[in-house]
Image (cartoon, rainbow, N blue to C red; front, side, top):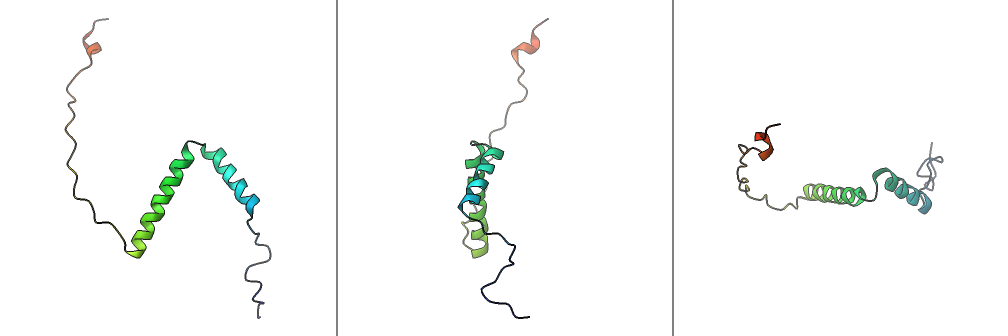
Length: 85
């Protein structure tokens, strides 16, 4: 059964227009809030960049091992621990 080249997709597959994109963006704004949307965008962008770099082989050299942070003194007690009630 030969198909007409004009009909590459099924007839019931909808087109996504400007109105639908705006609706999806408003839905994302309601779900995640205005504070979290930039964070989500940054993480998606950095993830896509890492994926692209790994596929194309353009990766930065791995940074040398960082020096460990100074040890935290956990033996100190709070001044309220020794107060009597």
